[in-house]
Length: 206
Length: 206
Length: 206
Image (cartoon, rainbow over all chains, first blue to last red; front, side):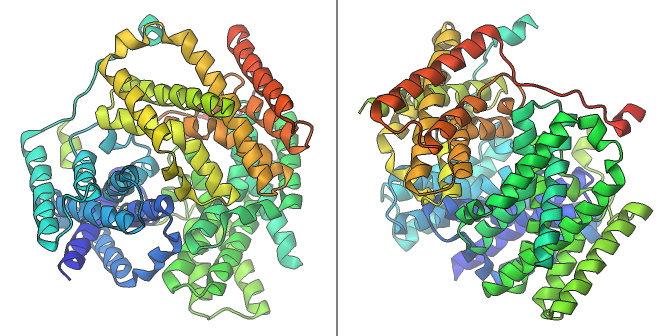
């Protein structure tokens, strides 16, 4: 039950993030709904595809769909009003979504008896796959591949579940809190993953 | 039989639209074929994936493939000549494709006993999914998410079939004509879906 | 056994190409790994999806994964040092990958009793699908659709296998050498597929 609440919070946060990106790109109302839904449900769908769960299972999430559609409508109707103070709340609910999706994704892959690589990838995809599809549909470079630390926290959750270090209920809750905290600290202190300077000879000559 | 003719017309129109986009982007002949084929068959393939029909069923459409490859070859060989007066015909045959694909897609999802959300999504994806993949492969923002009314007519068809308001043969033909007409009126009068102005604080500060 | 060695060489070359593109785009370490892995394994995964092989079979390639992760780590740690003289070697190992992936992809589709169109598409996708996904995730137009001759050699391999002209072990080796050679000559002499000038009336008026 607790996980269902976290899952709902994350779905809402992801749907809002997709709707906002669509508004920023001046997409029409169809674009706002499509990006909202894709951000909320695209990660889990891609994960199902890769770990061998029937993709059509997404259609069993009726109540979550309704909720996402409702919240996207609110965003579309009151873009400035509804989103004025969303910034901080958005980061927090999005962190809940990242953490929940990563943990549930990793557990899903574990149940299918997949190897560690698949479990880590499932956590990463469930947590950040929706955002990647959102960015592609918005004509942007996927932010998760170049900005602050996001997907790596999902992979960390996948790793700890995959090596069976975390498997008890209380352990999973602890992991949930840890990932949310790490994500919030990332935003607060502007943590980034390492980048490498790469001088491309060809580009340098142009 | 009638639907097969509509389906063929739509497939040709979609293949031509993909080939033209590739020519506009100065892609080579391989790019022209790939974008043509992807626009014609990508929507149905993605729909199959999401509603649980084996994706490999696409390979059973041999004659449609041949037709699409033939027409793309014509477009490539005579780009200016063949396309001089294509504009209006293109809009009309594309509208036939949109309408046919949406209706057949929705019926496909209905046969699988999926809920309404899946039926509407199947209509949208079959009708406009190919165009979205085409735009992504061309490095463009998907036009269906931001320009005039296109995908919404597909969703309307999906809705009417999904709530079982339209299920008789004559009803489906009527719906087909309605969607084609609505799409043609959209182009003629420049109808658009609502947009919302969204002032992004962060962007405004830059 | 020989094919496994070719396959390993190709996987390494593809992983390196993905990692380099990520470095060129200033992606962080997560982006470097994701693009490296996607380039190496994305083509085969998409092919499996389209020819009806369970996509989750990718997780059985543990040793190849390890190898790809190892080589991407090297690229990330020593970008300039490791890549100084990579250019020519990169082209050669990439050609081995293209040839191997195309041949193995075509044989995979043949075993599934798919028609010729599916076999050619399987060769094309296995050989160049990873690069297309890499380019999309990097915010680039897919190079295979517009630059020199790459995917067409994969399709040629698919064609010759699909019409059963090449099916013996020695014939496959000969085909392998031919595709590698054609690809190397393409790079050496700057061969290109035909392009067509296309004057878009609308664009010309703007």
